[in-house]
Structure formats: C-alpha cells, structure tokens
Image (tube, rainbow, N blue to C red; front, side, top):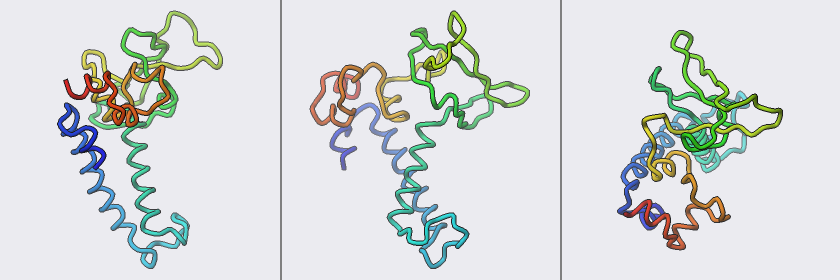
Amino acid sequence: AAVDRLLGGSVGYDELVLLLEGTEVAVAILCDILGPRSTRPSDGSLPPDAGAADVDAAVRASFVAVYTRSFRDDARDCVKFVPLLDMSQHQDLGGGANIEHYTDAETGDCVIVNAGDGALGPGEELFTCYAVEGEEMEPYEFFTIYGFVPGVGDDDARTVRQRLEDGDEILEEIFFD
C-alpha cells in the first residue's frame, strides 16, 4: 500500500513491484518448506518457539541482505557476497572511490585493488562505485536495489520514505519527471 501511495506512477514503480512480488513468492515458498513448528527439524536451526511470523520476518530479512549487500558479477552471471565490499561506501564514478573490484577470469575470485593515488592508511574508510563503468545507474535504480539515492539526503536525517511522504522536490524530480 505504501509503495502504491508513494511511488505509484513513478519511473521505478514497475521494477520495484516486480522485486516485491518476487520476494513475496520466494518468502511463501521458503516458509512452506520450513513448515509449521510441528514439522520443523529439531536440529536447532530455528528456535523452538519461533512462530510463523518470526519465520516470515527472518526470511524477509535474508532477502533484504541479499538484495542490498550483494554485488552483480556479470562475468560469471551471478551475484556474490564480498564482505570487504559490503563494508565500503558508495562513491560516484570518478568521485573519489579508493578501491575497485573485478572478477578474476581464471579463478572466479573477486579481486579488490587500490584505486586511489596513494596507499590506503589504517582505518581509512573504503569507497567504491556500486555501478559498473559504462552502465551508470539511474537514481531510482539505486533506490530500488540499495535503498538510497546517491547525493540525496546527505544533509538531512530523513529517510527516503520520509522525504517522499513530505513531498520532497528532489525525489519528486527523480521519481516522477
């Protein structure tokens, strides 16, 4: 309901709805596999008092982690979790990213290299560009995949949802123009 109310008719609406619908189907399938408490394995993988709502919430949280913390690997046609990249912050292409990553064609390993002018210092924050060079993402795509819009709200503590509810001009331009 909130998606329809806040983003209905926007450029990212159809993509967002497909993502949500796909998640709903996957959640239903996984919750059916986990089954009611009486049919769950007693191997300790789930707390004995976990109810259907707990299982549903855990499965949804897992999908959020996959969607927002994974990186597309087009060379291998898959999605990867790379913990070091997960700790990095987004920086636009050419805007100060100090690390880059690619997939080693022979091993399939994710290789992370220094992209800055000098050595990285201890405790230095890591910045990478979430978009692939030559395939820059539209702001609404960042929102759909990562839950934020680069450069929007940096000076404002409101969430994207709060900004949409407030009729924020910048987001109105991004999503509806």
